[in-house]
Image (cartoon, rainbow, N blue to C red; front, top):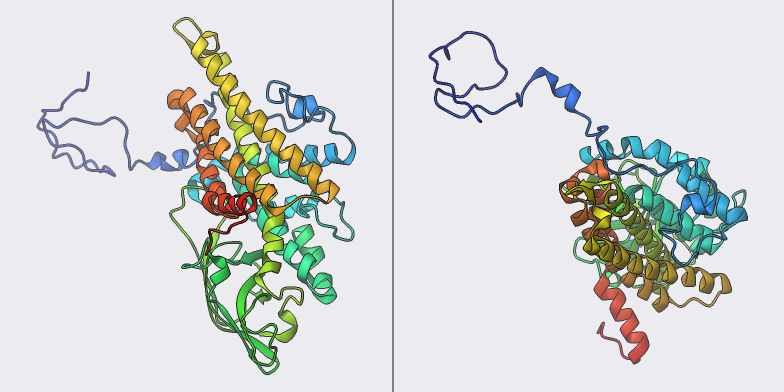
Length: 456
């Protein structure tokens, strides 16, 4: 029973840090302004209903039990592929005890980029001198495992390695590679990929940021939005439309420019209020007559087709990342179903729950098949952009479905960060949009199968 207070001693001079209720009003338990606030700063508790993954797992069966690998698609992973997968999993011990606090506060633990570099996980399949060359399968497994831990960590690799480093390695000069390949691959310096603009997301080919040739310099002006690592880091790979009448072939085309974030005229504000990927910062960037030398332009970037080469290469990574999120949600639902006792028996003994878990596994297995086939096609050098688009659309849709079902199956526990599902469910919403929305990727597939473009 909730009690009421009708005494007349409310005029006591005893200091309280909150306004006590007037006589006759309901008195709420606890003290929202108490000196115990510091003890409640952390959202980490010991009441989680699902277990953290084993960070010391070393074999395929430990990294992905057969309950989540029904077709044994990953049970024969070995050698360097297994080593990379295992290294990615090892981060669970460092990340999971803190990720809920980072996520809850919107803090960006940027030092994790250095840890990813220590483990040599930032190259995203690129051939970088002095670093191990990950196969397409290993690259995918790393993306999967990091997102299985947390989507922000997976995105750190996607931004630093998949987009920024890839732009330089594919389109940069020898001098640019010499300057940036090692610090970006090792994580000692941090970089952004600045393409999206406030008014140009899906139609980024129509970007309005301009790079004007002025003697021995390029002068950049415009705005960029949703740029991971765009604030408080070292380098931004800025995509802009070239204004250079002296170069008829390049004038009016899109090219990439290496921009030091400390330059005058470069201003970046971290975007607040996100409900996804809260442990990595995205920025709104304003470029006001930012001057860079002529050799800051990526010489291999002479049209948006070259930009698309970078984007296409990372699309498969998003499909793998979605698989990681979905795997975490499915595993949480399965463990909860087998340990939660209701009406005197585990939830897993209910026919409806078993059917739901089987349905989730069917969807998860289809995602795995898409990813494995993508890796095979990439290893053979025959992968086509529309194949990566189809996988991206399928897997982010499927991940949403699994995450929503897992959240429901966990009941009230499903909305707590400590049980991981709701964090993954929120982060999947970002994956569903970035690197090309569901609609745009579907239209790429539609163009491929009909021979007709719906973009114009």
